[in-house]
Length: 555
Image (cartoon, rainbow, N blue to C red; front, side):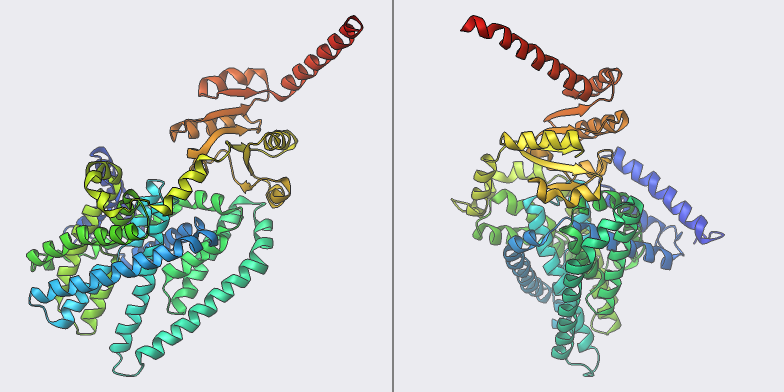
């Protein structure tokens, strides 16, 4: 085992090693998640033995998980939760029941005791919310239909995890606390938690965020603090930090500042999540992995194939297309870090053996690695399998047909940056001519007055590439910037083109000298307000004079 002079040096070496392995993975076109888990295994006690600062890495990993679920909550509002609730509940519970029953039967067929088979079956039901959301975020698919549905049933799974943990702890308490008492206590605490957050959303957060938004650094600091605080409160109430952080994000999702918060926290989240994957890999005990290889392979195939199939069947019956069911189903094709926690709890209670823990660990390693590739390449995979997937789709997939027809009838959408006098005038004229406008400005007072303007207004920064990714670019015909800063407009054009935006871009130039550079950058239309206004005024004068001089002749 290698020792380092201090924790700081150890962290520096781990980061350099992770960066090097990650670069090799990117070069080989491999998902970074797989590369980082491999780094954790290599630096863990089974191989290089570099990790001694387990507490520090674990703390940073918890911060990363909290920020991840907080950002996920930011991307949802109460309307989405209401609309996705039924399918999320049906799919989540259906998958949990199916996997538990079939998994138990497979374990029993391998000669496991009923208790061991039950532990393994329950461990197979949980999918990794952290890994799935990270993959969907990287692919910009969290806000898609299948992404929202997947997130919904992953949250249902997390709630089931909480109930299972309560049951096991009550079962292992030698009758001191009954299962019904423990469940009722957590239910009461959960309802109280939601009521408290609801009151904050109604009376505290709107006014506070308006004040904080005057300083972007302060707004981001508050977002992190709010997410961490509710995550800690969730742990104190027995709900888990994931549930607390998710609720914290949802509480800010209906505010106009959610996109800026999500964009600014993305880099911090990704950095901290590195420690989660390092911690996950470093905790794997390779000495236990080969004891039950055949059983591990069978259970892995069951998770990789069976879980997506049951999701596709349920979603097909509910009226969704096979493509949506397939893409959502792939997100449950692995087991979770909660499965490893469940196994560790089973060992501590004396319910299962270390060999069973090795079985769960190996299934986790196989399914997480393989499902990562399945999700990364989900669209090409669907194209190859689509002829055989039609059986999971109704003749009339009514859940999506209505959305498609409504989208076809929508008016053209313009995203307009800058709502000063010039931008407001452009927006008002476009609305009068039947165009839909989405305003974006960095002034919180203008954002608050958005409803009075007659079109939605978001709080955002045209120079932030991560914020640009939150916009509905696939439905946007024009992106218009009335900001007169050349650097901001160049950054906006570059961000839009680098993300594959195929619509048209109009930017504003402060002077004619900026026009050529903005044109080379890829702008389709360049507005020069004073010159445009002067030209328009001159045209109107000439036109008016021409009409006056020709009027007598006409008579």
